[in-house]
Image (cartoon, rainbow, N blue to C red; front, side, top):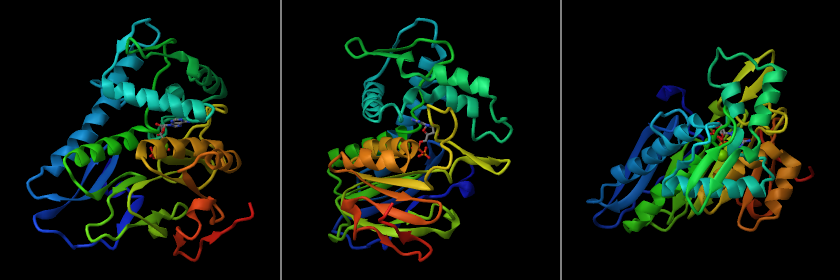
Length: 342
Ligand code: ADP
Ligand code: MG
């Protein structure tokens, strides 16, 4: 993807320049996981922050991409239906386990066995036709969660039917960022943020003790920049929406988040949902799950959780915030308005 086609969904505003002695700002962006990674990290000048971050993120991509022929996930999908067991690395085990957890608690709205439907829709390919109903039904059947067998004790994965497979696109970016932050913290790094696509993880606030100030992107007219701000010291903020990877045919928007029950990209859904959680792996999975569930079910789901908050943005530019975000998310674009009465 060309850099100028990429929209950074969350910007960080009002960057502080205050630094302790020997602590320098490492500030860079690069392309990975089909999007742009941006970071600002304050650390000892001798620490090779760039390599730590790049290795964590590009390393995760190498293991978890469904298109990279050297990835473990590619291999699992290729061997689907052959009866072969694919033994997986600890990193892939971890992400499969956390994904299966999110699959379960979301009632399979978030499901990594969505692969056949993702392949069928091929949303980023402008030449891919809208699939026929019979193809969609076939792919719905192949996307059933029982197609995935994970043996925790022996550490292997086996996909039952030929054509079934795993797609970690709804969680891998969050996992990659958590991994990078974990490595930075192991190296005694105290302050920073890493953003990737529509997600960000901040830690330790700014070196001068102030919180990071995030700009939350306008999901209905993305080119207008951010429509709201949010301050936080440490935590993850991840957005899913219909405005990113999409195509329009016959006036209908087809995008990259698929409702596993209908087999279609979620229709007439939210403009976006933004999840606020401690860790970006969870926030990423929740954002995809809640986008699939839609407002009512998604709100009920989030309200059952402590430590997770959500901002729902509708196409009419109304915004609904869960209780923990009230007075914390500040709407700065007057086209948007809070509607508490949904
Ligand atoms: P983004 O990739 O833009 O950050 P999401 O985190 O919401 O957005 O992930 C969307 C990706 O997740 C899709 O591109 C696809 O790879 C995968 N996906 C699509 N539908 C589902 C679903 N119902 N459950 C899990 N993953 C999904
Ligand atoms: Mg996600």
